[in-house]
Length: 267
Image (cartoon, helix red, strand yellow):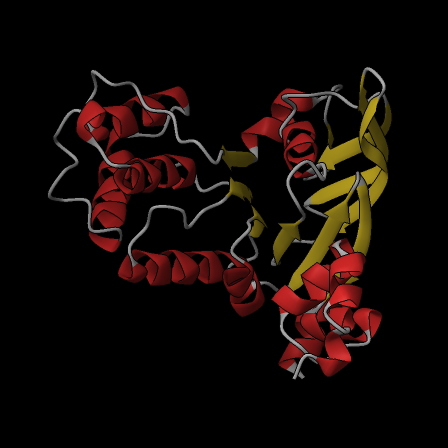
């Protein structure tokens, strides 16, 4: 009964991300073709696709870093490109290549982000301490970020994204460079956020992570969404009982699956 109620509530609320007939080209290259996609509050959505499929272009349009040639994108009810600042205030974006200021410590960087969002000092202090403990950053947070590994940078950038408690977290390749313990912690953080009614929009090539944590999965190829739904939905669409990796390869590279005899014979 509780699940049915939560599904009803999600269905009657405005989508956190609402993309309608969005098209984006770069010269003669079509990056995203008439894309329609809706992600409700309280959902962890995994956005998958081969290199060059249109994932990053889609993400940058959601964040307002790029503008579509046609179609609309709403974030928490705010039209990007018209009321984009209000939409951006509701989201946080973590790119696949984390950027930090080399001559700041991690703690100084987090404080800088907190000031930009006008977060009260006591709240900043509390949240930074919580994230420091959760992500095990105590050993390096007071060092200059120029000394950090990729995984350390990823932890700090993720913490900065969570500081203002965004309604929508958009994250590209969240697990790259993280040790197994931190991967588990980040998964738990994501699931905790969606339980609180937040939305996580995750792009990744780590299909095992997507299969393990996502409520729904969208697969984009050549600028178009070719599959969308839960794992059961994707298995039905691909006529396969196999893993997400097998389904992904079948849908995005069907000729490869034909060459190896098809999924049904893969064993």
